[in-house]
Length: 372
Ligand SMILES: Cc1ncc(COP(=O)(O)O)c(C=O)c1O
View (cartoon, rainbow, N blue to C red):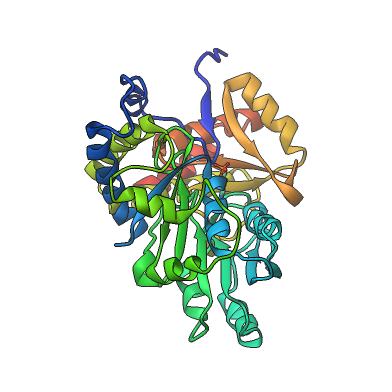
């Protein structure tokens, strides 16, 4: 098998369309000059429909975790009572970050193969009026679970806690309505559904979150939101940004806007359903039940999954992701977000069929979903 053209089927970073990659080769510009000042605010405005917000969106140079740390460092003072909703590896990242900033930590545990139970969150909040911040993940990439952000937000009732959401592997692949759902902080990144190279995080604060952060006593410098707000008045970032990711993002947004956001979301749902039908047709067990299934990544149980993945990589040049945390070596994950089409799902399934010598079984089931 010729493997000179590797196929990346992981939940980010995702393949980058050629026209997006080409933007990275543009000549360098002054990040305090006229061209940057024209493009930077414009691209952030175009992200607003993906966030579902009128709030200012900021770009931070760093990976998705830098956006998460920006959220925590602007909100969590020592001993702040926070509630982390942990149902996977990235839910746990909120726990670790809040610990690092000295929060008084409350953790609600959810099984690492299903969604967050909003009812349980509501009950916990009733018993703990002191909680000031809630941290959750919209699309838990480690388990391939899509959590219901709207229902968690609603479960707060009249509780004053702010809701902070990691939408790193969700934004641009599934609806997100920051303002309508009453979410206070959203964090995302460039290398997932946005189809751009890694190295850029995005963060949006509601007015309430911005007011709350003004009293935050945490030490912060690079991530200090007040600096980002101040420099935004001049259409600049406080520090030298990942300039070319602005251009890359513009091109990626051209692609997304041409397809239409609703069509983008529908494509992700279709890829999810095809992947799941194909895996089932091969007799493979899915980690997550249908109602919690992510539209951007699918997790499949497989004994000794890591050696299986290595075999697939060697034979076919296709890269699946492994399990994380308690799922290490027990599942493999197939990314179908961003620059991915139903044909990519058929290719991933064909590889599984060949490995299992069940020719045509998965692709047939997936094709039926595609044509239904
Ligand atoms: C849901 C989620 N949150 C956070 C992250 C962390 O992002 P990064 O690796 O860019 O720091 C990831 C990365 O895979 C993710 O999928």
